[in-house]
Length: 517
Length: 94
Image (tube, rainbow over all chains, first blue to last red):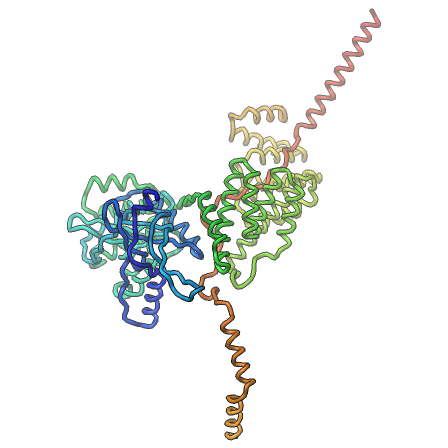
């Protein structure tokens, strides 16, 4: 048994957070009297750190149909643990090796048995009970909100965005003059649910913030609502607080507004000065090898009703790894991952990736065949499990445009420009990302050039040069078509733009000299 | 009318066929698989960490200098022919 295996042990038995959540919802809908359940019931289990004897909270991750949620939850916990911010409740351990007891239904004997289970968990230090909100001075409230901004800005910089601001997740500890926030990150959604149904109706400003889906804007709004919930009366705040979320595009901007309200402190000023400005979250990095290994194990062990819940995220993980491996220049290894992704979830984007990789390793005919097969299926997967919302249809249309574009490019490389042209034209009608659209416009230009339609080629190549102005390859192709059409002045203008953009590339200068003298 | 309903109900209560039908319904209800789809949310494709998928290779670059190269090659050939002709003339003269 490793050191970590022996370090934490959970006490008691897990009831499950969903039970507490259901109780809260039932109480809210039926108007029953409802007492908020203790945190260990919502979060998991109470436990002990054997090394220090300190109490801990253990959140077991028994992934099955909730695997996708746990993956993100664990990644966030790892980031929070690495950050080590004094304003976060410390995350002590993330991963396997925590022992706890759970109930299991023994179908062969028709009884519920208690079993010892060693599984993946998140272990945190037990958060202290929070002080009630609503009785702080403006200066104290601003200082606490600045602490929240400091932690949130650091979390945003590492890609963690889903934050909770309710009193259960964001607690205030300490004594007058030395107040400090203790924030649970990753947050416990059930604590917020309980807050909505028990205390939310009492006071408008303490009710949890409505989410818009944009993590940075949601955090700014949440921090403003948190600040508002701390002071007894909103009228005591000097500035019109309702305008703050609209004025601040990131947490650092909000900190600049809060700073004059707090008591002067060089430490706080330095913290605001050095706060990172994050307007769009970077992607939360997941360790794909570990995710795939865990997912394969879960997939083979999952109940048939739950298998799809594992298969979809597992296929996405294979597709992500394939995309990365291909970008690193190993299409053969990427193809294996793409094939597994298609086997787990036969959807058009994965089939397109597989075809692109087949084309890269020289199996052109197979690639075209695979795309023909995939494109012959209906636009969006239908059925009760995949409701066709407008978003789903837009995504499906984009995937189809990408697949058509890929088929067109493969046909072009196989020397079949007449088959490539309609596919590339159809792909350009879809709303594709700029790099994809630029490539397909360039391909369309090449197909038309090969069919001696030089005017059409120049038109498509002007589009590709506009979509990707930094790509000199597309621009040289346009120069070629313009020269063929006898539009030498325009060709010269575009060629000069290439030289101006990349003056140090000798190849461009040589080519320019050869073409224009 | 009322008497007819009463008779009908009594017949149903005593009928073996009615019991058999009820039993069959009960068995079907028990044997049906649990309605998991009602309890769990539908499975979703994740949207995390969107690395752009690989793009197809671009077509080979246009051979824009082909015409210029061909002209150069022609010139070179002509030059060579002329030089050879000159040499032959000189040799003949010699």
